[in-house]
Image (cartoon, rainbow, N blue to C red; front, side):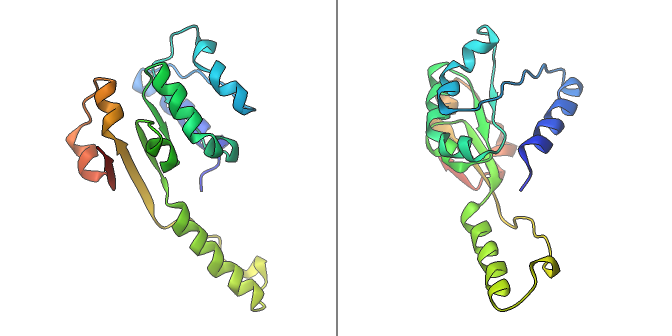
Length: 153
């Protein structure tokens, strides 16, 4: 799984080439989420979350705040889209846990952890919340709709 730092670096490197200004706000506690949109003086146009355990646990909270401020948002956790966020793209956590279980079984059978390969997630999901897109008056391109694993209608 890509670390939050690596993803943030990639976003910061890509933003100027897309003629976008990326403003970063570090969320350290769930209470910080409610203050996030106003931290940009009402000029935020979208929310992109980077992976963290706390933000995974607060997916529904993030989706509610994005909806309240009418901001399209994206996360790597499908729970965010399920809770009303615009879209999510990331590893299927259930499939990833199965991969970890296989590795754990090998360790329990005597394999040395250092001898096991590092594995990346094998299955990724794209979930688009069409209810949210309609509420924000956004048109989701057909190319995205065709690639989506799941549409929330």
